[in-house]
Length: 131
Image 1: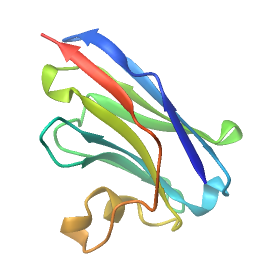
Image 2: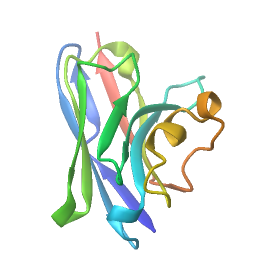
Image 3: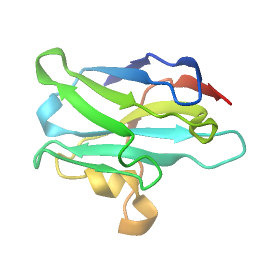
Image 4: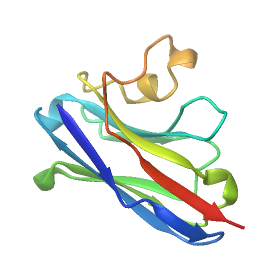
């Protein structure tokens, strides 16, 4: 299983970025996949996760209405479109995947749902939002 993120960078507040996560080594439809982030001095948190079996996508309250997760099944790639960025969005963003097709919400918020974070992670991409 391999997850490779790209698309991070430096952007001014109010700007946009689109992150990509290219997945390989597993059947895209059999996994749940999502985006997570970790800011300096803070714990890693779920941003948006997708359950492949249900096709549903969930979002953290802090990003609802600003971030959109999508997938290109032909390319085995998921995206995170981030709009109206604020300095509070500054973090390393990770792509994660779990080998359960209906695990999206659980792996995004494991402490709330009695689950666990993804089994597989990408290397992360830095997003920095300047004020």
